[in-house]
Image (cartoon, rainbow, N blue to C red; front, side, top):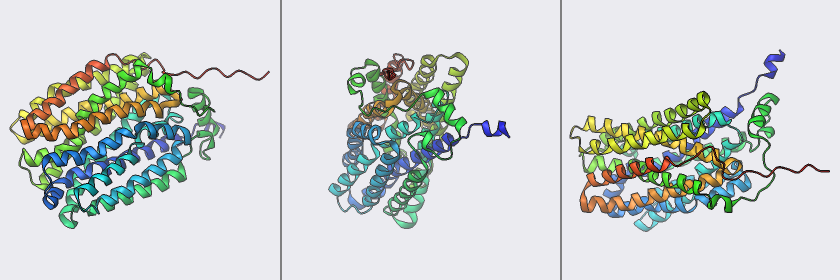
Length: 428
């Protein structure tokens, strides 16, 4: 009985799976407008350039509020912060369905993005006091796999709902999903593992021995974060990733309809394939990275080799995908491109934990700000690129950014923390 009692509980894994569900919810709400957009265009008569600005409304606010969202989450704790922001963006998900003009839709998408901006930094912060360093690559991989799984199944579900109930109905359905998640999160999660009634002493000791005590201070070391070259190199790699990936999240369904001539049903199925491949890439990237760490102890090498490989494969494959005339082969190549891009994401977010420590929320918010500036530029630029040069050029730009991202990641060092807590002086 004593050996059973001494075995650590696995509450941290339940916390992880709740976080995976959160990532799925974010992408349900984020991606559905891409599938709904052809129907929205048919109703409102929006041009391709106008659609780019609708997509950008979300990306702009999502980028602007990354740092405020990460800072506030570090200050009040991820339990409260994630509850508040999920309820906020769920409300504006529902309100998107009530849009009556271009202006109303842009305003609702901007406010929606304001809420979602805090999701990933605070989800990362929520894991920083629970997940062991040797579990972080896998944890970040599996959470982002949840995001891509959500993105992959959303086009199919939304296409089905639109066919039967119209384009507005899915926004109400997914808003309700967010409300349910927020209630479960607030009930179950605790900012400190020691405060969770289901963790036993063995699990608390396991976490404490790996991570130390939770910090008492609330001041965020912004000077150290923003003056760190390491921070900006990581953020620049994520800019490249954000531009490249968001092409598949925002514009890919429209590309399939406009350039490949697919119907709504075909578009829903084929748009899901690359994102489903991304799920595998998320899991594989985090798993490979952690396995390399376990075998070699070289965290810098492990994060770097997986992410750089992913960037370079995507850069090579993407042009072949867009030039391939056979739609099935083309989709398979696009799937390989997204799989490769997703080898990057778990490692990038694991690095934000590695170098951010107790301030991972703030560090990851800076990284994600640059990523979403990339996504914002992509959303607007693609509309103009397609109007002037066609769809092929838009994917050549994606390939170029992936290549640049791979070069930049060569200079990322996950073994050096940006800010180290000063030692506590014992009372005399």
